[in-house]
Image (cartoon, rainbow, N blue to C red):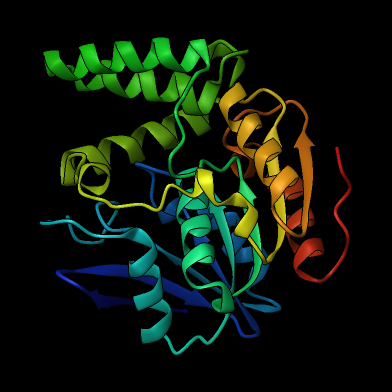
Amino acid sequence: MTRGRVQVENGELAYEIRGEGDPVILLHGGMLDSRTWDAEMAALESHHTAIRYDARGHGESSTPTGRFRHYDDLHALMTALELPRASLVGLSGGGRIAIDFALTYPDLVENLVLVAAGISGIEFKDPFVLEQNRKLEEAGAAGDLPAAIECILRMWVDGPQRAPADVDQEIRRLCGKLYTHTITRHGLAGFTLMDELRALERAGELAPRTLALVGALDASDIHDVVALIEREAHDVRSIVVPGVAHMINLERPQDFARILLGFLDGEHASRG
C-alpha cells in the first residue's frame, strides 16, 4: 500500500494505491471522502491497481483557493502516477466528475462505472430533494451545522422513500462524520469554486464501456440521469439495485463488489 500527495494547480490531492493490475480509480461522492471506498479497495487489490483519492475541497486534500476543475485534477493525478488509462468508478458527485473527465479525456478511460451518479448541468426537480435543499439553506443561514448535516443525510443517505430509522445507523453515522469533516475543514469551496462542462447536454458523446447503477429508493433525479445516459451514450448497461437509495456501495458492499468486479472483468451486466 502506498499513500501520497500529488501536486495540482494551486493545490494538492491525497491518494492511496493498493495492489497490481489494471488500474481502477475510485471517486467518492460530494462532501464525503475516500474512506467510503474501504470495502472496494480490499475487493479490488487482488487483481487490480486500486486507487482512491480525496477530491480537492474534501478529506485530506487541499482547500480550493480559486477556480478549478475536478476533472483536470484527476488528469493531473493520472499523469503523476504515470497511468496511461484507467477504469473510473464514481459515486454520486464522483460520477459527475468521471463523466466530465470521460468527455474531456476519452482516450484515458478504459471503463466507466457510474454509481448513483449526478451529471454536470443537472437541475434538481424531485420534490423531496427540493424541500430538503430549502431546509439546508435555512440551516446554513442560521449557522446550524447539525441541522444542515441532517438535511444532507435525508437527501443522499435515506432517500425520499425511507425514514431515518429505516436506514443502517452505522452508515448514517459514517456519512454524517464525513460530511461534518469536509464542511468544517473546507467549507463549500469544493463546490462553489469548481467549473464543470454541463455534461447534461453532451451525454451522447460518452464513448467508454459504461455501467450505470441506481438504487430503487433513490431520488427521481438520479433515475433520470441513468435514463439519459442509457438512452444517449454509446455502450451502456444499467442495473437498478433493489432496497437501497443513494449509497449503493455502503448499503450493499458484497453485491456491489460482485457487480463491479464482474463488469471490470468483461461480464455483461443485466438490465434491471
